[in-house]
Image 1 (tube, one colour):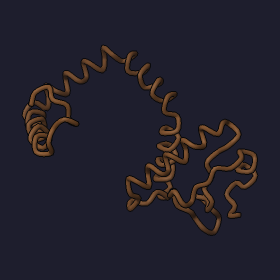
Image 2 (spheres, one colour; image 1 turned 90 degrees about the horizontal axis):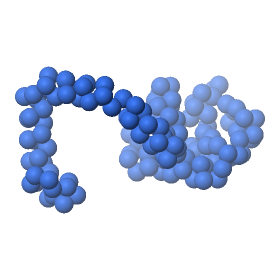
Image 3 (cartoon, one colour; image 1 turned 30 degrees about the horizontal axis):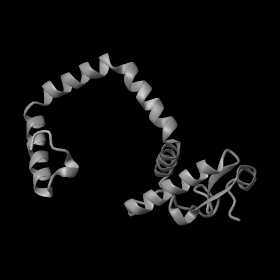
Image 4 (cartoon, helix red, strand yellow; image 1 turned 180 degrees about the horizontal axis):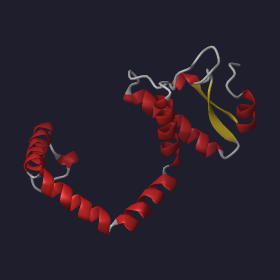
Length: 141
């Protein structure tokens, strides 16, 4: 099983490998953390460059993630959101990015409305013109 890719493993092989890896980490936690800290210190610039490149190449994912984090902070992203719905949100942000700089993703029912607060869910998102979004502010249409 050594050197085999996860995609080429059976579920049983993957489970066995995961158990083995977790057991090794638990037995050698201090050593593993020291190795990781040493690697991080010597590859700091390389890691920063890779993070920046990923951020540029995956702007829609970064925007969706930022919106989700902000929504969670104000408790607008429900725990019951499924992975498929999260992917749908990400797709909305990707579509908005493809449309260019004149558009933004808007919450139909604002996350911080005066009387009602919306949720960060796919059916509460729409892509609209930036100017209209700014004018709309935290108002329900």
